[in-house]
Image (cartoon, rainbow over all chains, first blue to last red; front, side, top):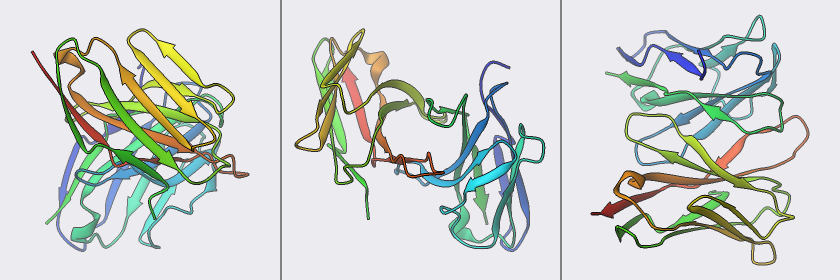
Length: 113
Length: 114
């Protein structure tokens, strides 16, 4: 596809469950970012990958959050023991090179009941 | 602490009018300032961006004005159209080594009345 894609578009889960959110960046983009957007707020940075490695994970709120990008393309954001406060839209973005413009996907809306 | 402060929170403009959204920042290390447009249920879409060595950048009806000394930048939408009704976010990036994340403002909900 031409743009960043994210699956699922919506995810409803129960408190305490484990969830995985997937991001397919634009083909050839080396940098990948995860952000979280709460209702009525701007996106907040979670983690940034350059290639396969997490170059900056300073935005992850706690150790329940983890992300991987094993082959330098698709990335998965993993949330353990979900809490109601994790409910938000999780956005993925990619850029051709680290300093280039970031292009966002449509997001995954996570609802923790 | 909000790294980028954005105002107003909401804005109503008549069709054909000028929409102006303002942002301010404190970190003088920021080196890139994009604006994003977001429609309900969609991800943010890059609209226009500027670097601090330029005072103004224009693309079609959209203009960024940048005041480095005041640490402020603004988005002007000329001849605003109902289709411009969306939420607009300013952002800034720090060139801190190994980091490229954007700091976003809290957003401005623009409504253009026909």
